[in-house]
Image 1: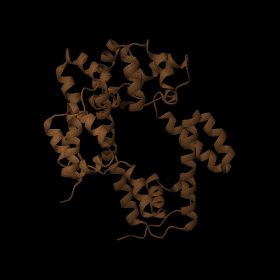
Image 2 (image 1 turned 180 degrees about the vertical axis):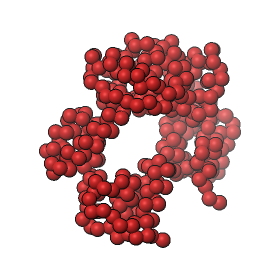
Image 3 (image 1 turned 135 degrees about the vertical axis):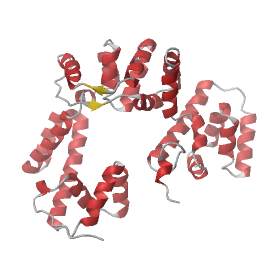
Image 4 (image 1 turned 60 degrees about the vertical axis):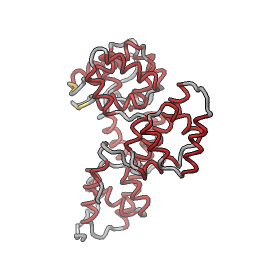
Length: 344
């Protein structure tokens, strides 16, 4: 039951959660659901609580919230395309001056909270050239602050021995002293860009390594893990436990398997199953019609020799489908946390 929360007229007096609740209220159900799916669970809970207590939202206030949200989305897009300075110019050209200044202040604060933010827009190839001669510990610190996709591209471009050294350091990283970050930034800014201060945060760790390696090609992944296993087999076991590989598809429930199969061509499935375990083959084929499963078995029987790299590529494409469906909440993988949200 909703309460009768009195909302201030001034947009600046609203908390971020209240603005989010008002925005959700203004959207249709499908758009609101898509928006909430992008938020962390704790944030969704906060927004939902505020939404439940909202009284009538004045139209003028709702319009201001929508206008600010639109402006922030523009700012984020501009910032990604050309950096903060580029975003400032375009925002002042396209928005009301007061709104533009407020949005610029907000995105500037966000940028200042991100270590190595100036590296986020650099092309991976250029960034690799820029940092590949750095000490492995420095590279580990930098890639721990990059997106997992960019970090995996940088890692794949490093020499094999340095890959192993960097991964071991990322896995062992816990809290980074802000003074260390400042020193690294100071050394880099003279060569590339100015950098802003950052407070202590938790970066790296085994989970970060698992996410990065999940995005690497199989050859790079295998090479790195084999290199680490020689000196630290327990660390490799911890990393592999958090990674999702082709054989892990057996952990997807039957309904999820059927959803995955709808997005996979038969010839690709045949190729991917070439090196699969019998358990996984039965799991996948058992969720197909009898006729379709027989056709797959016949195709596999007459397929002949194939390149291992082609098999691994097909398997990785299927893994990508599984990961995408899991992230969107369409399937559940046993043991990866989703089942705790089920209500029976």
